[in-house]
Length: 254
Image 1: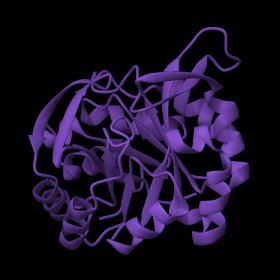
Image 2 (image 1 turned 120 degrees about the horizontal axis):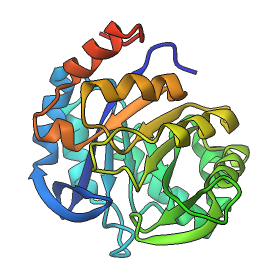
Image 3 (image 1 turned 30 degrees about the horizontal axis):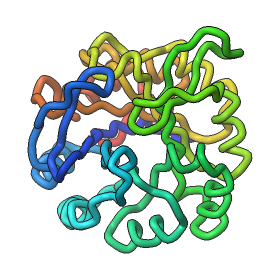
Image 4 (image 1 turned 120 degrees about the vertical axis):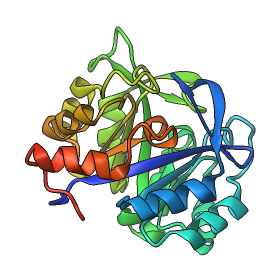
């Protein structure tokens, strides 16, 4: 696991623009991805995550030109997800500047995809993106969803995460659909459960609203914290979050 906590802004992109909603609905325009990426790089972001949130729904590939322009502006690791269906898609994304690639819907439809990517590029390239909802009747109380949170599956979130790690996933991006965009704080129970079963780094996502929300996510077991709307709106900066984490005794990169 990483010694220093990573702070990661997320660019949810649709039609070449950064968007954000609540619980993955009612998306609104938040700006140009390249401009925001440059801003967060200047503020001291440790990594950037770029998610094409409508690629799978629209049955198309990620917008490669936007990824390329974003990668040209920042010199920190860039994770790209959305519409990744094959190892060839991963090769192309790495070719335009991505450092890591997130998979979700396609890996659920065809789990062998995880091993194919890990075997060809290494586990460090593969981030399993988990859009998780609370659901009664499952062992853990959480299920994974596909198509940008629009379609629930019957897969228990913890069981799927464990299987994906066994198949070669090198990192878990755990996004709470229930908390997403609410600014009510991260789902600490979900983070803790994922930490218990995961042998790879866990990124907490969904629900950040105040500087005080981030340290509890680290305490619950996250190796990194990811947020979107609080950064896009200017309510918080990367520096604000790192200062709060450091004040709480969490090691951060400066």
